[in-house]
Amino acid sequence: MVNLTIDHKNIQVPEGTTILKAAAAAGIEIPTLCFLKDLNEIGACRICCVEIEGKDTLVAACNTAAEEGMVVYTSSLKAHYARRMNLQIILSQHDFRCAACQRNGSCALQKICADMNINDVPFGQSYEKKEWDLSFPLIRDDSKCIKCMRCVQICDKVQSLGIWDIVNTGKRTGVGVSKMRTITEADCALCGQCITHCPTGALRERDDVRKVMDAVNDPDKIVVVQIAPAVRSAWGEGLGLPEKMATEKRMAAAVRALGMDYVFDTNFSADLTIMEEANEFLERMTHREKYQWPMYTSCCPGWVRFLKSQYPDMTEQLSTAKSPQQMFGAVAKTYFAEKVLDTDPSRIFCVSIMPCTAKKAECALPNINDAGADKDVDVVLTTREFDRMLRSELICPANLEEEEFDSPLGTGSGAAVIFGATGGVMEAALRTAYYALKKENPKPDAFKMVRGLDEIKEVTAEIAGIPIRAAVVHGLGNTRKLIERVIAGEAEYDFVEVMACPGGCAGGGGQPITEGREMAGERGSKLYTLDKKNPLRFSHENPSVRALYAQYLEKPLSHRAHELLHTDHSG
Ligand code: HC0
Ligand code: SF4
Image 1 (tube, rainbow, N blue to C red):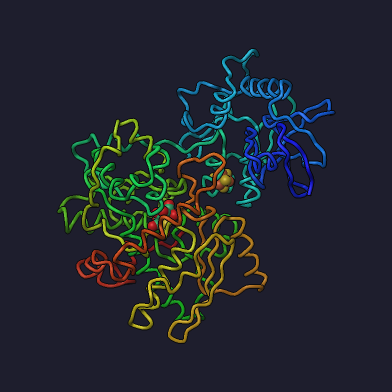
Image 2: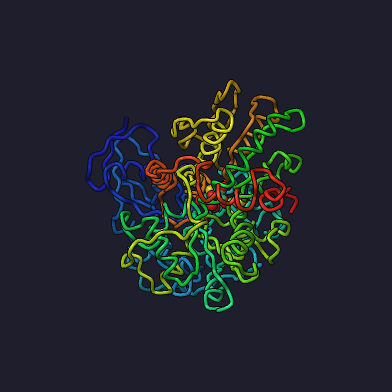
């Protein structure tokens, strides 16, 4: 242990502890900007600089270890002036027209400037605006980049893709796509993790809100909305809505208040996915020799992009089941259009609200549209866009009464809602595989050993004498490790669930941005609570899914189910 004082407080911390951490343990908050715990502790921005008695130069608190007898001042005159000057230097190279920035209100730089009482920038401004393909779902605006390196680190260390790097030299040094590629040439999975970890508006999603509001205002369009499982765990965060107000039913009311014609639930099609995917898995198990193993889940488009770019030879190991988002679109523009509305599918405008940026690319895949209209899903909005749309349309959810989802595509089971947390798809699939093999339900929580935030979870579930070797992984770096172990013959599985984002969709790249806090665990717990509260715990018991099979699809893996609900992932 070492003893030191910070701002006259006596503090004792284990050897090697940084000044930043030591101060936090004593309740003293030192401001940071480039710091990202365990990932980016490079002291680049110098906002966390502090004065140490007896030293001429200030040090960065994030990467300087506390020493025995140290006397630290976090806001001495010298530290205070240096911090302000460092901020003003950053601002001199930053386009700070905050009023017209997507991150206005959630920008870490903006907040620190307000906290530090910055009223002016006594230096001239110089920043570059580089060209970018604004139709790509992920947008980089160099004029907002403060060179903190967080995007470089998250994409490299957590997602193992290394899309960003330092580019140029001297005065023009900045961050850009690595290896002299454009973003479309690079293997970006579109997970959006660099967006949620960017402190400013240098990285953002393409905003598609206007496209949706134009459809809402088009009298010829019937706007049908689906809301992904994980959105309900986070949508209130971006609105400052207290947790007890941010319910599923109030979310449904808020979507309806926007003028949408039907408010449905991706949970419905998550149940449908389980019906198809669990049966496909059992079918593959019956003809084991015909397939490469393991079978991988296919519902996370960030993961599918990763596999197709990093391990293209393994694409056939993906389940052919489309994601719930795409199954929903296909069903909305066939079954719902024909059997419920008796209308032409071209009139239906299908909108998804997703915690995900990769879903924007998934709905645009050329070979994913099977309903006979232009696209099965027309537009994907992230949770952040949904929150912005509510605010700009002057809708205050706190003033709305709760409302039900519409029927029939609005009913989902507890097994579906946990899709939004890492392990949830596997758990839902095992519940239904158990039923398919034993003709009786397991206890609903029988497979809860796949829950939690461990990097890779492995379980062998013995069902009807058949051992199913399952694994669950989240984060693309962890996924690469798992795949390399399989290739090296160090691990053998039958069924693997992969989610690109740490924590699964709850921690998705389209979720509200919470500077300095990883929310996936908390949000995931909310989803497990919703599962427990739902009287329906099994996908195969969803009455709307049963009706869909009875009236339209016949049975899982039928010819029509194959046409509408499966893909060969060749797009
Ligand atoms: Fe997910 Fe999904 S669970 S990927 O995270 O399968 O985005 O929430 O909507 O499609 O259901 C995201 C979340 C979904 C899909 C579902 C799956
Ligand atoms: Fe990397 Fe994901 Fe950002 Fe693409 S979206 S650059 S894969 S972190």
